[in-house]
Image 1 (spheres, rainbow, N blue to C red):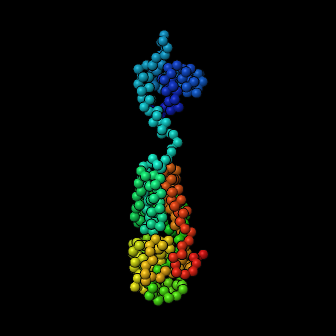
Image 2: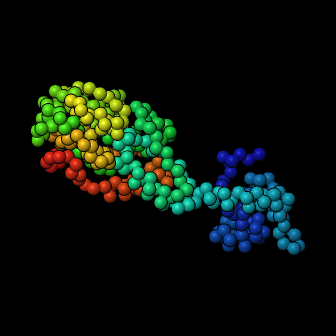
Length: 314
């Protein structure tokens, strides 16, 4: 018995031509080969299959019973092989992809427009937005999630990342907070206050905590909440300070009784990014999804003016 690893798959095309034409010269023309090359291919096929395949008769060449069986199988197999090795195409209008994306509730700045774009262009596809958790990058590595939205400064060498946009931080505090009467919040006043911390990873609002740690300091948590949306409702009538990305705050109507002020300048703008595993680089559906996200991010306004005072920090 011939094992597949010992079979020259280059013989498949000559075999199909010989069985179809039942003539060496005609088969050579069909396969784009010379007649001597086709004759050599026929001999190799006879050796490989242990059968004459073509037998000369007064009426011309006839197929052996084995050749007839092989021909029936080839007619089923060859189209599949051609499909297997054909260049891939992706038509979003016809595709029925399943995209798995993860992010914190900050993703509402971008995600609804992404959803609209995806379903307008690929109505048969499905999107799954997964909850953010501390092991989300392991999920990317294991293939449980295709793409994540995130904001962090540390490099992730095992993943491919791409910057989407920046967002500056603003402070939200009750209008009767002692610091609300000023024009700005100094770093010292900021550190002396109690804060609402949005738990993005390990009970830390990492984009802020990492910057303060780089300066050798930290802020004091008065309240820790799991969602940005809940945090915005937590400062009214308290002495707490909430620090939020400005784009997120702009997603909801102004709350009476609150003051919005620029964060201290040392708290630099947040860089919002997307990340995916390198194995998805060439997947046409995933490439289309990333292109869709890029297009939505490019349409976001460059600057917002929600803070009560002064220009965006450099």
